[in-house]
Image (cartoon, rainbow, N blue to C red; front, top):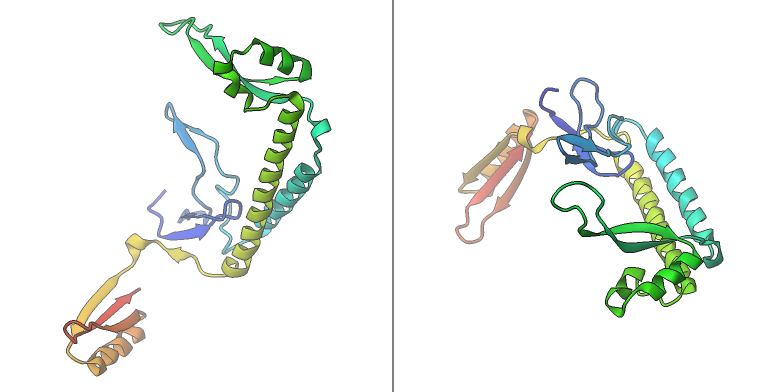
Length: 221
């Protein structure tokens, strides 16, 4: 891909990313790289930026609000499994074979209580400071409600992005912006020069420096 000249807004995450010059789609983003391989990408990757299309943004808003409603409807008695951190022996080959490692497992009420009784006070934090399974259920519901609040906020952010970005031109990347900075002895001279630059497609701004009374003109295009 040739060097991107413009940025666009992702319809899913709402962030600004480079736009492919040839296809007009957003570059891959939202990923991590491990062992030279991509791990996960934002759903908005390889899709049109919000400035061009809002179809995916509207779908994302709907999905966020639907999931938030589902999370907010969950009650503690509906939580049958709780995620717990346990210490296990590593069963892989190598110098670390047999070493202790932490692992996340899902436990029902019976398993959770048996695990709690097996823990010394030193490792009670592995239960997330929950004293009973019912307490753990309450904490799980609280976590879902926090996630629901985040989804609602994200949907609101995308709705705002649609209002402010959809149908707008793509943003030129900073490295491709031309800049001018000139100094004048008087404001009229600076404004005259600014008008000349505007005719050539520049965006000009005039400001006065108080410490030496000089006038500065800056312009970009």
